[in-house]
Length: 354
Image (cartoon, rainbow, N blue to C red; front, side, top):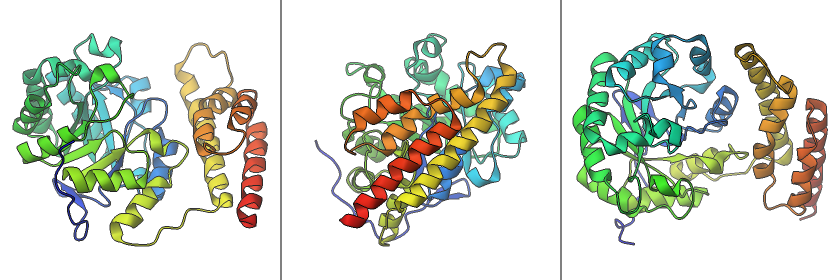
């Protein structure tokens, strides 16, 4: 790979978007089913620079549909937070952005131009916008003319290895007036598999003047710093690596600031995970009013939804396969809390012996 020469990491590592200061320049990627209010607040506590909502329909928001507005509930503990919107019509996207700004709880408007879900792409939204950079340009222009908040776009390199058009897309986004471009360094057809191609991040950073935030292929703090050093991007966005490990943001922040990093002890990690679970139960309960039928109680649904966080929190530990089977059978808050405390007590004992 041909990348930029590694650059000095000393100096100002903040990111400024239309007066909004992002410090550190490290963001939580929007992820369906994960980046709800509970998780966002925890990531911010561990020094994530900014967070994003899950994918929200611009059409539903423009109509002020109650269920859509519910997905945009956020607290002051999450700020700065972006409203992450998808749609295909520039005028509708602009109306939706205006509603999000009017709510008074968001600091950025983020336009999705990279979601690979077929039913979203088939409507010309998400990664479907990669087929039409001119429509994306018009969308950015419409939103920029409507709101005062910073406007960002999250996209991918292209639809497939043979259809990479990120240069044209980045030009359209910049000319449309966006304040930053977030590039997931994979093509749509690869979804989240295979290595991310950071060479494109370096190329787009050289070609464009607007800030570029890199995404994809970051599993550790070392990866985050390596992306910043070798590609020249202005910030990084972390997704799946933060699931079950929100303190990853704290490690990146410490490393960027040149401070020593001390991982949280087992007792703290346990407390944070259980707090997350309890807040997730509350969120699922609040969402139940928008659903006609629920096979599971909010408590059961939250416990099942939380399994991915638990599995990733304990990855690398002996007996993980057995642990997964055990978690699959736990569907009450009490049972999960007991199992998690038991696991962390064993980790604490093991670490004390080392």
